[in-house]
Length: 316
Image 1 (cartoon, helix red, strand yellow):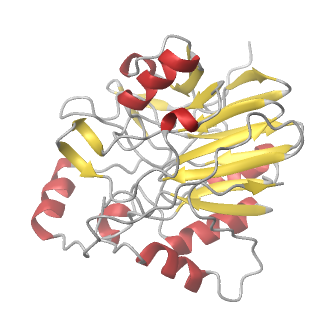
Image 2: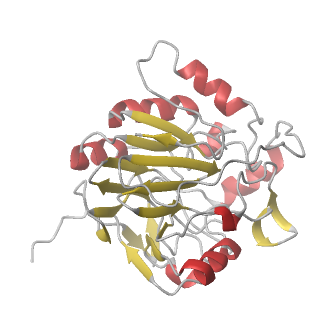
Image 3: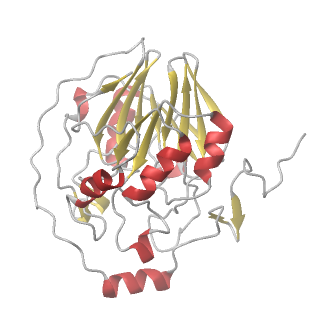
């Protein structure tokens, strides 16, 4: 069997002392966290952001690709007759309990049961704002979807049909659709003792109608060039733009909008849709800052970046 060298761009994730590490070697330390808690100054957010109720999505899409952002990193992907959802999050808080954790400021554009039947859940990593056990439990009871995620994440979920992947490994989803788990620059934890014991990443979804890249949570890094080299230019890239201040801390785990634009350029994305903003107050950037900074970053750039309202579809 041919073994991929650990320093190869397409090698799987490395572990040191039982914990996964970024390809860059960067990681948030406890000292960083304590410094952040002492010094950060969060810009104000509205306590409640009104949201409009969206129309129910189509039951199935057999022609083209239909992408519907639902807020934060939750996106409904409909292609080749499959309904796929990324990091489904409908809870009022991103935290270990109903009263502890980041409060949801913008309501979901749809009730959870207004979603069409979900065939596949793509779960990028275990952080509370991405792995919401309450939402997953509801989808498990209603639809029994297949859940595809990174190594060691499955046991955290309430789902039964789980496929765990290392970086660059793939899973066929049916209908000619394949999901490949790809690297991200981030981290993972749900408590004080489990830091980086499960893997984090994004997904390339190859379909008969085109290729979708869901980046999950990620800082800027060399993985964008590696993804472009391996899969070519995505037809749609879903790139995070929020929770990026202060940069001395957040640059280790999150891109800012300027870096998201640079990532879209490296990827050669035909269409880019921003995610990970406007729902949870997770960092020091203000509510309006991600989109305003994105607009400034796009000045003079020939990029097709679309910012639909949550619940409104982009259809190729």
